[in-house]
Length: 221
Image (cartoon, rainbow, N blue to C red; front, top):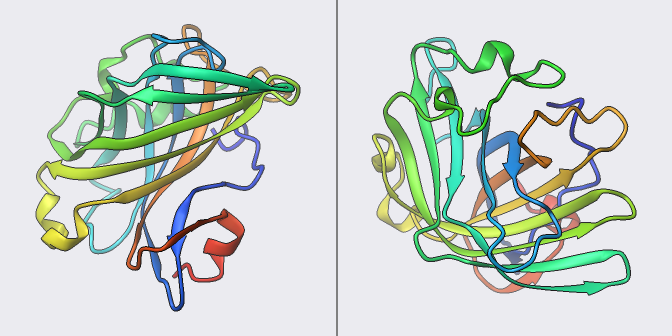
């Protein structure tokens, strides 16, 4: 997947002020079943691999693989400026779920070009639920001229076997930032999927004004 995703600099609307501190929780890669410039009702279901989990989350990538799915997101509205589409999403019932699976049946073929993910591939949602949360914000952009885009989101962690790795104060307002690509040179999108993506989830310890990924890097630990 690293060959599939164009690193255009993850842009994420994260809060920073004064001595703000952002700690990465999750890094993930995969694909979305959607048209990135679709109108209202277009879904954004997807799945892929979690490639890193950071303390205080406890994980074992030798004994297990970690996969993710997103479900329940659909486009609420969109607008176009030049070659870029800006989308907002319905959030009711929308979930981000991480699974912990000792069978490790998804990881061996995920990096094939194209990956052999097939539709709602069950290998990406088997094993116990490691962590699950509901979306409280989600927006996306996509530029048809460059076939690349960004997404920004927020999730509150609600359940899963590792929810207690976080203190109650750390379970809310986890921030997403990520990039997407479609049909670009070197992009191997599996059949049935429309777009490749990579994302990171952070917990920001102080809340204030929105800022760019470049600013966040200055306070990231």
